[in-house]
Length: 416
Ligand code: AMP
Image (spheres, protein in one colour):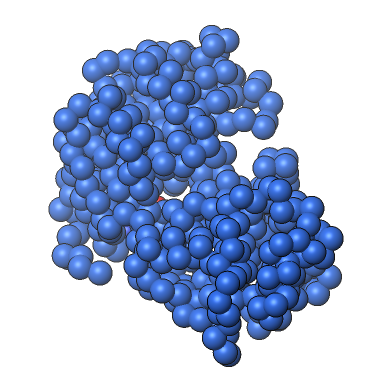
């Protein structure tokens, strides 16, 4: 990577924050940190294009802590001096964890608010006011509407993974939140991609922002060795078992398109002796946390996840990302494989591509500019199997369950 040898000490951070950086064990800033930290410290609005794994959390949390310490203010009851919005509870929890790490030596307070858990403790935590509030949009608005918290004293706001918030349908909630915030305020937005609607949001709510990008958007980290295995949909379960038999003891995330699919895959891998858990939107917060902890500690080194549940998973040492099914949205592929090769490590990604997913793979290659290496012995591409994109998704389920008797199943059998 073309990174100049910028040191953390050259970025304008104060001594206590630099001590926290040293405490976290970081030597040099990542490219996004080198650019974002001075930009945020300047007080201007900032748009940052950065993928997950780029070190973006510290890129906005470190300067924020610095600013809040310098102001020496206190938050009145039920208010927050700064707000960090995240699309999922996992990401919100991870960000709060980072805040607590970097703010450990200070007396700054941090609270995290997300749905799926009882509101009572969150209301009590807000009662005295906090310095940094990390929240998902829906539950935050719930609390704002009941009067459990107020946003009019919040003068610093960070939107993390804005494109994901858009995908999850949070744009109306975000607009509502931004309108309730105090002014003048500093607004910082991070996103892995910059679709038109996100740009519009930035134009509307950010004033003359500094735009920074560490790596070209939508480009997966070059260190990831990407591969693809062309396989019929009906053969995916066996192919996965085969693949995973060579990965025993390694940390692997397997992505599926649906919650039910995640459960099915996890069950099958468990039958073959893998320590495995599934996480998705139907799991309780407790289940998700336990699964994540077991994954982190290596007790259950295989995690089967849907896209949404996997947001914010920041686990060091993930060896392999398996795309059991290709995502309908190419950007999701970038997010998925970004789970490996984090913080300087190399990583691998394998996609299982059925004939009706060829179009999705093509789109991914177009977006990333990188052709995954084929792991098939022979070229598997007889003509005519470039079926409709699997994006149509839903209607196919029943046919597949009957053993691939539908249109795509017939094509696959012929192809095989
Ligand atoms: P993020 O992109 O914020 O999710 O961060 C990805 C990972 O990189 C996290 O595990 C961080 O702890 C780690 N990290 C962040 N900044 C640095 C740094 N300057 N040096 C080494 N690791 C870092």
